Image (cartoon, rainbow, N blue to C red; front, side, top):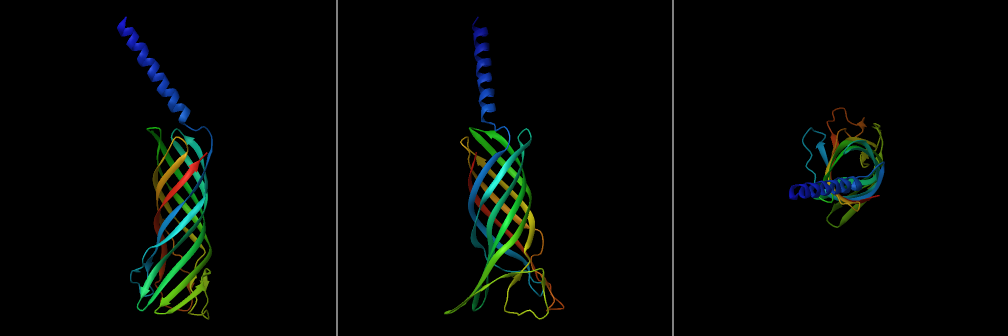
Length: 225
């Protein structure tokens, strides 16, 4: 009799656990709002083919995404972000800070596994970004000069040497990991690697090995509903 009672109690506990797990899983698309901080750099090679030696700058991102179920615990997660990137370079006695603003479309695939009262998340996928605006600030001693960055695919031979140019299109890859609580609040660590050269074709120089790529990582805080 005692064994039967214990067996019934175990079955009831198991059923309650399954019902709780099912109730915490979202059915259908779920929308999310997020924002956070970026730690960005511009890596690659200079005009002579030597590695760029830039420093990280701090930016930010803000936007939204939608999480679409494609299989148990797996989701497709497209989004739209406004994201600031760039780098700081130092050539004594001048320090130059490059700030670039992008509209970005991440297309991530996400695994979400139940952990405690929430979900552990691991995601990866490509992104496509388009440059909206940018500024470069040159500082040396008491002198400070700030100019707009121009986005173009080709720098013509008669273009001024004083203007800074970047390609508008950026393509790369994302990878992130984080945790989403049962109430929908989530925190994730992001990493991003640009895969294409964002320096335009430069007709001013016949021998130019300059290649620049966006790289960085960041932290996002968001809410899913």
